[in-house]
Image 1 (cartoon, rainbow, N blue to C red):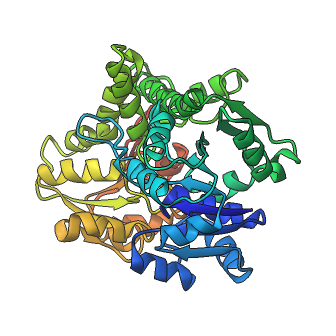
Image 2 (image 1 turned 180 degrees about the vertical axis):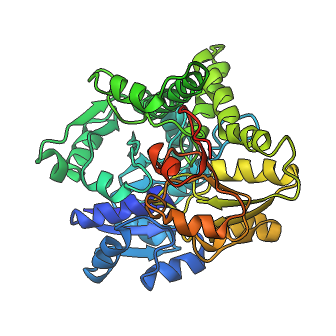
Length: 437
């Protein structure tokens, strides 16, 4: 099948590459000429493990194409995926201007039946709005479908090729048949495709992400309580997770959630609720707890240094909001950097993947190290903000030689407590006893 993807951000590029891998001819459209030219030459604009190999394979197989010309791609395709940004506005609501502008263009350009698929995360009722915009511009038949994505950054290729389920909101039988055909390679291997109405499909994505945000935040609250009563959150987590009604995933405590989805989707669902005179009290609490959780270790750093960290050098390992991505949207590292700088500390950071994205925001407000050990040179303390694999088994002897103090504040609980203890480090993590040096 011929398919157009409008938007080559994280969702659009992974979706387009996956659909090409399934044998379709995919035309990816983006208004950024430089970006499109780079992709034509095999340059992947985002960091995602294993994406480049699949991306290049499908370009070489002539199944994956890139253009800035929406009309050209539209004319070649029966199905049009909208993978456009829906950033939060000042009030937390999702900005649909990109989606509706492209819907308007499609209405003006289409010359035959199309299925328009909302792949972006959008509020309930967006399919109706897209339908209204297109219908105002054309008499040609078309259908609008909601098909939310459930990709985890850092595992997007794995998730896209091995989905747990496919959710499709479509009220048209013709559109359902076309979507079933697209996803037949998955359903043939037992992956369920769940058809529902468009509004239920749109809410499914928000509900899923918001529930996971609540689960993470609840575990962080438990971790903080563990410290008050002397319990060990690692043991509590294992005990909880072994209950198959709960499961082990998303039970790892730390310095809050971030990224492109959870913060935005929680805000948007809260705002959508208020528009219907409904208060998502549990989500409002989740958001407030997460804001505080992100910087919970800064007060611990101050406490260690007698209440004053002015002039102290803090090494920071990790800048991305999670490992295996270059995404720094809503990253806890940025909240901590801002607060530490405000209190007069100096930051030397290391993240080989996300560094350039942080430089675009912070410039020379902090220093950047070439490797994890260089960041420790004359550091008064180490702050671990991202759980990159390279940080899992460091050379503690070398760390001790580089640092002014053998002190670690670990926002991701990277080490069993006995490891820093054996190496003589002060070690403060989340929800566990503090190791004193």
